[in-house]
Image (cartoon, rainbow, N blue to C red; front, side):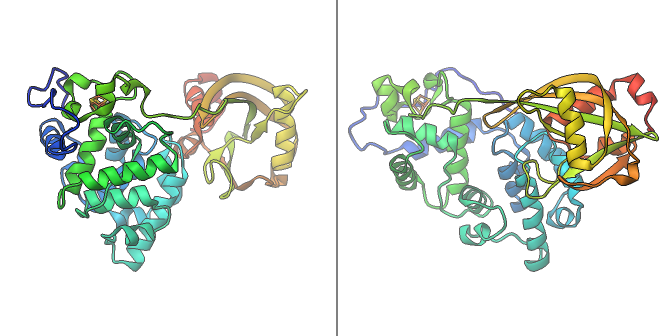
Length: 385
Ligand code: SF4
């Protein structure tokens, strides 16, 4: 990828008075900057609609570098709509494992099947047609319609919200209806006809590389001469945001059960949080309960199996949305007949070899546990490879 030169851009009209013809030349300056500073990203090499679609879904809530690595691995295995449509969901989830927000992967799969079976493998080229596909919201539909198909529509993501809030010194909360309406109308007014692909990417790229949430690099910004927040010295106060929600701390416990050299894993319900991902049985530690007691209770409640003697393996921390989770993991000993298993919180179970466990997709805490066990020679000695 190109690195950005943060020295002052000598082509920018930094002393331009703000009041006269406020936006004249702004889009040209932005497009000129983008032509010189755009990053070399894999989906920009062809603008293949499937590539653009996957990249837009993948990059939501994901940092660029990480997103590129996942994108390249994904395209090696699922190079087109047909390959994705025909793949097994477990394999898709495994390729998504670690990106979080797993409904995005499930929806990509559903939409790919629909496009493959009903539309001959061709993605619709309009916002409306794209938005009619499962899981495709207004943002993704507008991004694909403009970037892949050149439709004249604006794309508003968090980067664009920030750039526009600063350019126009929008002093109401950025997620409010009023701010949204202003950002949309400002962007629509700026959008040069026929250039939506580059314009939208340029706005997002500027927000990502220059107009950062903290310490925006105004000296390197091609739009500095138009920026009202910069002129007023309030760029750090824009966009106006609401206070983040208070974190919620959760303590969870899980048990790894090995029987006859095989490890018990269960697949979460399709309508549950972390739907269709795999896990070792367990759950939330209740008030007044120790993690050991919780794992014994959860086994009985979730699988009908009695276990005892939980031996600590370790504790694993992870966060999702506002939750901060500590997962306590134990090796447990089976008291029941394994054939008596009766799932109450999962759609299926598997007695798996270790290589099968490694091929399944787990949520973050359990994934850390699997990685930990991967290096535990004593544990692996008792498990079929
Ligand atoms: S001048 Fe500064 S605050 Fe304004 S758009 Fe550029 S980087 Fe952002």
